Image (cartoon, rainbow, N blue to C red):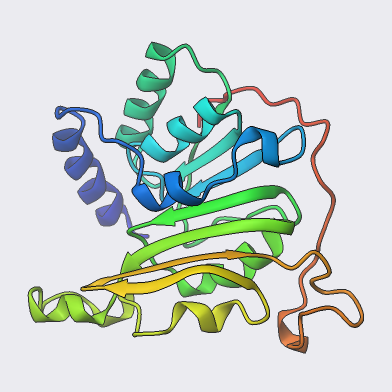
Length: 220
């Protein structure tokens, strides 16, 4: 993103930070595995986290969370909320998602709301552990009816999201008006010989799980 983009999003979040803190997104609350159903040292990634309400909720459920956003204003509001709630398990990362590097094989859960960058989908596939869950929601092309000046490249085509995750266990897939929602679990044998990944150009680098992360909240 350009410097102008950063300035624009900081301005947006200066205004939003003055409002009541938003609740977590309903799709995340409905599908995120609770602590008793996932392994110890649960790690989540919140892409384009904004005011970090989803990262805050995940931390309250017992996850260690990396929250990434372009706006340092939004991240500071999330950091203040974390302190107010006496939480300590969120890393607030000031990152340009056009150039972000996401660790492979690191996450039990990845969520993304109201953001689309198609070039990140291979990294998201790789970043999830086998059995990990993706929760994704973004605007689709129906938004053009009410907002014709929207850049089409920033909107999903109808039925596009599932095409990025062939062979995954789809738990939720719908389009409600101009919003596309998708929840899927990565197969436990994904990328292994004979596994569910039948697309050679999508074979992920499963990497290693960061069991021993010294997980301390850091300033960007």
